[in-house]
Image 1: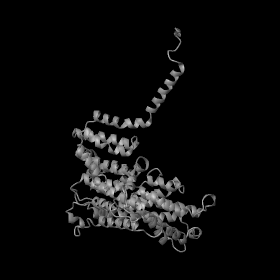
Image 2: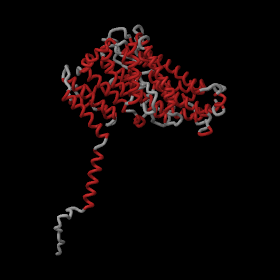
Image 3: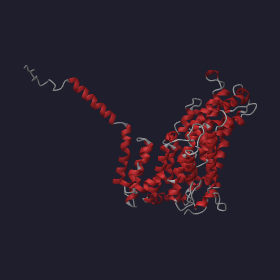
Image 4: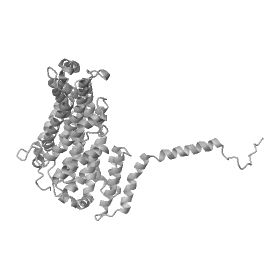
Length: 530
């Protein structure tokens, strides 16, 4: 048997050279994949948490320091999106028990509050509306009414914007944007594009997209179900002040709807002044008239039994929401159940009917099935749960009292100065850093403590801060709704700033004016908080 002699030359490598190069390259690529900005942000949360636990000493109990550390961890992950937001939203479920803030059962209860039941039920109903194309039928009918004969562009714009705002009152903003943008672009498809497009047509196209985009945000303000921010605010109010009168659907509507209406009319006026020149109706009527809209409506066919039932259930839910608690003299149907039933109770009940009532399309088929519910936005539901859990943790750990003492210097600041500042700060955070839901979760606990320091009713700051977080009108990346509108290609960033900046100023002015006037009457902010 032949043996190959092993080279005794010391310069000869033990391993072939190309193997060493491959191993070196593999090591460097592995190192590069580990040392990334994303991984740094993942480590940033626990690192900041550890620093606070080791270095920060508070006058209160240990749980308050731990709560501050956990807050910084969760907010670091939310702001950097190092970990997907829904997963970060679940982190209080393990962080709170491990850091001795609250038990596993207590923190888990925050994730299934009546406010979350309200959101879940309304989302299921919104999916049914989307499935049966009811939003499109409604949009075409209203547009047909407002079209005018001959074509009146400001009136048509009012119809399109009004429809978007109305649908957004009952459905989540993002869902409304996804459903309404195809309706808007379908109307605009009749106009010429490219170099053949006149300035009049181009401006009207911009006005329609901007109108739908911002009307959705304005409409979402006016009801609790319009956007997650409103629900986060109401949930935190209930968590921090369990003995105080809860904010019901009808209470919120009585304040937010007039505010939204003032904003909507100002916005419509701005659109008409900036984008609808005199005599534009004549130029636009060549491409768009009532006959076109009627043809589109006819293509949808007559309303089927399923559509009528979904519409009836939706109407029934709105009536139940509005009449659960009316006034002290007229208590509403909630008194029949000794106050045990909430807005979420009827929301889930009506959603359940969708799975019981037959659609009459196929044998055995119901109006909804679970397959259609796979599009439920669990990310928003989990974020809302996290917000409520954090509110509970801040209060129960004693951190709320410490924050209140720290902010005593704000006692001398007049409310007239701080309310617009709160609006501006919360809208800027949404605009530049994070989502409006995350902004509300970050800022509302702090505003409660500022209100205590100033000796004003907490809602006088919570509501401007919460609604202000929705005034993200300047950038396409500020909210998913803005992104949907920008993606149509009809508008540019300068168009958004041109209309968004005055709209933001109007919104801040409306809130600053109505909160100490109408707000005092609706929310009884002149009375002490229990």
